Length: 261
Image 1 (cartoon, one colour):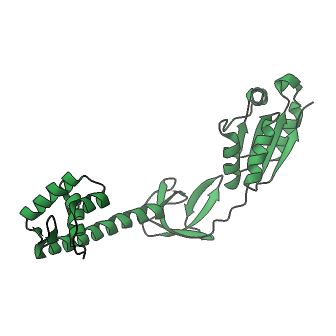
Image 2 (image 1 turned 45 degrees about the vertical axis):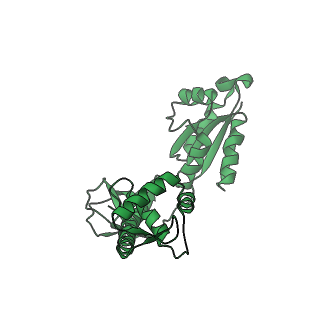
Image 3 (image 1 turned 120 degrees about the horizontal axis):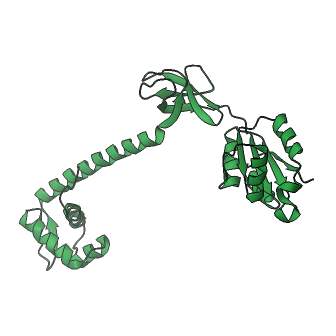
């Protein structure tokens, strides 16, 4: 780790400023450039002089770097460069690691195929249009770290059906055609169900339908559909428009079913 001691970085910066090929440089110039006080510059320069890295120049208030100081700057720059490269390598590793669920037992170094199933990314020994390499050995069903992703994951957007319910002023759940909703549920297999509003909650309760989400419903609906899931959304009155506008923005197809009696 470079600059372990407090103030070492500031000393390095000041020394680098003094080393610049100028006819003269004053403490105020250094302070303004580094965003510190003139007093801080003065105290650091005194330390640098005592350590033999800087010496007074002929001009009043001017300083110049010594051979020892030049060697120090070069060494610090090399250390900084090496440290920066280490950090960059770590960051690149984080960026390139992706999680998935193992379809089978997988070993470190295996090249696996990638597939999306019910909105979940899986790694499998079967070849697919997308691929990656396993970082660590895992068992079937465990989360697996993947790197070197390539190809394209085959994924078709899901279908969205927006159920438009009557408002409470229009009769709410009592004015809803429950049999029509049952038929819609029978006609298509929905992976996720979302609701908006109290009337929606009452309707799904009557129909004994399990709710998957009820907050940020327009956003969650769009994200689920993009992951290839079929989504059924219960809305009340104008709430249907809120969901449909979000889906329009994401270019996701949908139908609105008005189930008022």
